[in-house]
Length: 268
Image 1: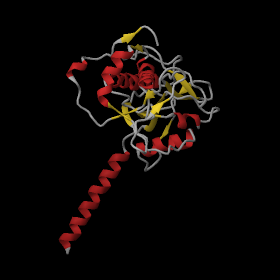
Image 2: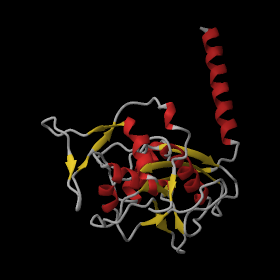
Image 3: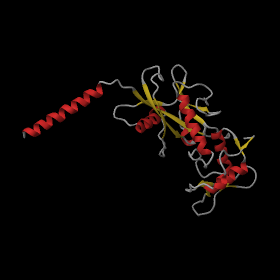
Image 4: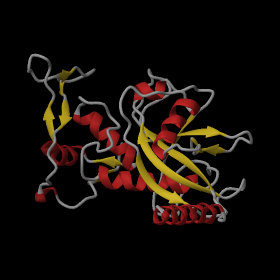
């Protein structure tokens, strides 16, 4: 009995030491910031060719920022990201959003309000979700230019280090869009080859040669079928109806597809 008592007192002393040791260190605030990419438009009836944009908000001083918030007590990063969507953007997607972590931004001087460490995530919003965004609370900022490290691809500088987050997310997306059909699912299937190419052009910020693009992507696509098992077509304004496709589950690459990048075109 006495031995058990000594063991208990030793365990309590160790726990007390660990708790007091943790509280003796200064701790930063932790935030989550979201790079929400889209080729949709705030106006669902806007049928212009898609362009890659990022969702931003305005601070009281007019500076553009990515949507984000501080992590509340006992909340996870992903739970906080969902709270940003619901409480700051007023959207609750009917589908499961894939949140991909970009990086941890921990420069002690990154935020003039204090010591803030931010965990940045990227996700994609489809047209139905974009059209539900409140126009008085958000903007779609178009992205253009070279997404090399240290470069800015937004038309104006974002607050904090949010430009770095956007550039990193787009640079990684572009590498994937050189090789696979719509890997981030920016476009809801089924779609035509022309619609798919336009999305790739929006992400890559350049024109692509149509025939080469089609040849590279077709091995990873299959015809979309309707409920009767018949191939689906899309009636175009001019010309023949266009075949509709969806992505297959195939992942291996054709060695004859050649190295990326996809061959560029001078027109878009």
